[in-house]
Amino acid sequence: MRRVTPRQPDAEPRVPGQARIRLGSALRAGSDRTVAGLYAITLLLVGFGLIMVLSSSSITSYLDDQGFFGGFWRQASFAIIGLPLMLIAAAMPVGFWKRWAWVLLGVGIVLQLLVFTPLGVEVYGNRNWIQIGGFGAQPSEALKLALVIWIGAVLLKKEPLLGQMRHEIIPVIVPGAVLVLGLVLLGRDLGTVLIMAGLVIGAMYFAGISGKTLGVIALGGALAVVFFVVTSPNRMQRLFGHASGNEDYSGLGWQPLHGLWALAGGGFFGVGLGGSKAKWSWLPAADNDYIFAIIGEELGLIGALLVIALFVALAVLLLRVISRARDRFGKAVVGGILVWIVGQAFVNIGVVIGVFPVLGVPLPLISAGGTALIACLVAIGVVISIARDGALYQEELQHAHGRKQR
Image 1 (tube, one colour):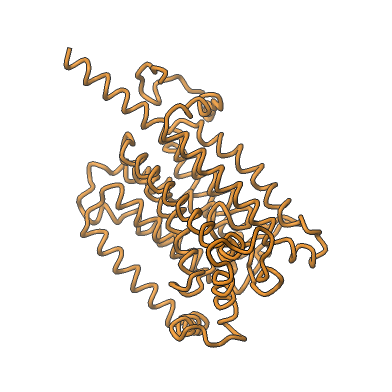
Image 2: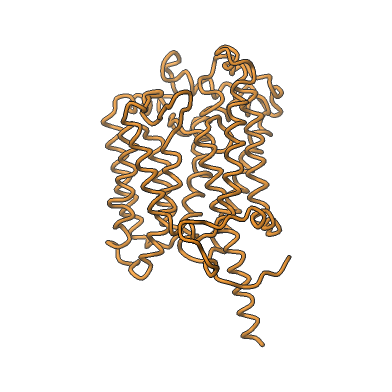
C-alpha cells in the first residue's frame, strides 16, 4: 500500500467557506480494503436495486402510461445524481462535516417544515413529502443524515463532560432529537420516526455514552411509541391485524398476505427474473416497501439470502470503520448510519416476512425512491470520508509506535 506522510486532517490551509474536494484521492483510497469494500457493496446493492426496480415496476409503469421502463429510468436518474454526490462526500475532509454540522441540521429542519406548507403532500396517510412541479422529495431522508452528523459533532464537543447524564442528554436528546423526531411525527410517519430513533440510539451507543443514559432514553422512547400507537386507531388496527395473522384479506391484510404469498411462490430458485405474478397489480408498493417480496418470488431463497448477505457484509465493514475511527465523531456518525441503513434493511425484510407489522419503510439502496437513494449514497460517502481518515490515523499510530521502538 502506498505510504502516506502522517498529518493532521485539518492541517492544510483552507479558504473560508470553501471545501477542498479531491475526487482523485477518494478513488485512490480504494487501495484500502475497507474503503474498496464499501464502494463495491454499495455499487452491487444499487445495481441490483435498479434491476429489481425495472422488473417490479414494469407493469405499474405501463399502466400509468410511462412505458415498461418508466420506473426504471426514474430510479436510474436518481442513481446518476446520487453516485457523484457519494464521491464528493467521500472526498471531503472529516473536518468539513464537523464544521458544518449545525448548518446541515438547520437546513434539514427547514426542509422538513416545508411539508406543512402548500408544498407538502400526503402519501398513504403520511404528510412527509413535498412536491415542486413534477419533482417530489421526502425531506426526512436528508434530515436523517443531518441529524447523525450533528449528534457526532455535539458529542465530540462535549467530550470532557460525557459521563454526566444531563450532558449526555442535553442537547442531543432534548431539544435536538425530540424536535427533529417530533417534526416528522407531526406528519404521522411513525415508521420513519422509529428508524430515526434507532439512529439516535445507535450513534450514542457507538460514541460510548453510558448504559444508564441509554437505558433512560430507550425507556422514554418505548413509552412514547406505545402512546402514539394506542392513540391512533389506524395503527392499532394494523397491530391487531398483524397479531391475528392478517385475516382481513380484503382490507389491511391484503398487502402483507400477498407479500408472503409472493415469497412462498418463489421457492428455492425463484420463478425467474421478470416472472413475478404479484407485480401484476396484486402487491401494492411492489417496487418500494415490498420489493423484497418480488426478489424472493423471482430469484427465490437464493436471491433473498444474497441480499441479506450483502447487508451483513456492509454491517461488518461499517463496524470496522467504527473500530478504526480517529475520534468520537467518527464512531457516532458511522454507528448511526449503520443502524439507519442496515437496521432499516432488516426492519423492511422483517415486515415482508411477517415478523413486524407494516411500517412503511423502504429497503435502502434497493427500493424505488429517489430521495431515499440519494440520502443513503451521500451517507455512504460520509462513511468513506471517515474511513479514509481512520486509515490515515492508523498509519500515524503505527509510525508513532515505530518511533518509540527505535
